[in-house]
Length: 440
Image (cartoon, rainbow, N blue to C red; front, side):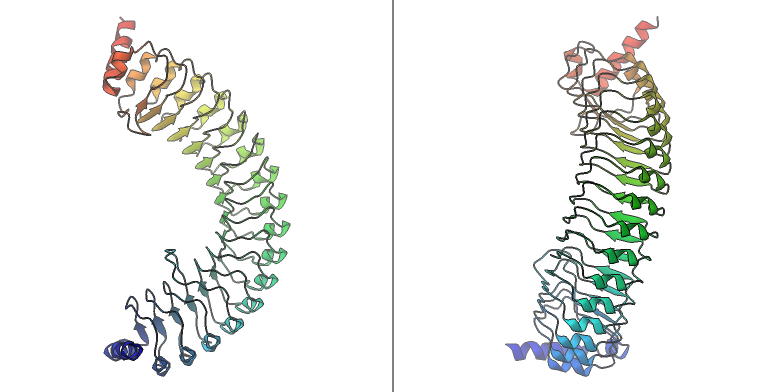
């Protein structure tokens, strides 16, 4: 059987002679379980794709392909790389991903010889079982991208700091509990992903990564951010959701290029006035915290299009909320609001307003100015009547799971229950008629 497989592979190689002559050979998705030693005779190959096969190992002869610049081993069943991999001294791209979590490649370690691949610019090892990186990783000084997402790394070696040309570093979904101070030497980084680890703190050296535009720290165990976070003035995207933060440092206000800030699922009890300095923000997520109030400075975030405050402890909204005139989505559900300020009517770009599970007893007539609304969620409040002005919201949809006009579990008397049962169109018609009658 094995001999037949090897003959089959050699047949494939022969058949693809034109590709070989061009320096490229694509043997992807051929259900290959092994490579014959003869693979080493293809010494002129510059690119070799073996992705989406069933390879469990590579033959030592792979090391004879010394002209290779790209080697694609994605989605196989490899558990180790042979030492001979280090002979591929011209390699620039090495991909050993198993990004579909199929139980494919399951490398538990990298051989020390990996450090001999000094021309590598991209190394992708998503979804394997690496528990540690060898010190030799620091010899890959030409790397610009290192992807180690979805492994079992518990720490990084100090030598990681030698990879000073890195611009992209993906370390998410591992078991890291700390970052070495040497992380601060990676001053060319623009993207750093660390979400879903076990980090309890960030080293002050994080502030030296002044070229970062994206920093993902979600789903860790951070209780505080270092003041040095404020030095990352090029950040546009900061994700810290799912941690244990109780407060933000004032230096957060120095991140004036931020467009997206995700702070949901923490333990924040207040926002500092400095939040108002983030005037480029378009998306701010604060759901599942313990906020009891918003600072007046929130009104300075005039570029916001999405603001999520679901499941906090807000009892009131300040008039400054009306300054957020670019908002299209506002979620204030599961709070303790008893009223809305009239200024809510200034948010004329809103298409979705969610207010369910509060303690609202009435809505201001200014809500009728939100004529672009397609979703207005009001269930689980204490409303006895809807203002006739809601009849102007003709774009509201019929209730459909999370969309449309929802009024369940309110002690409504106007419109009466028999009208409410007929759906959104009937409710709007009733309110329009009521408004007409009031103006006669």
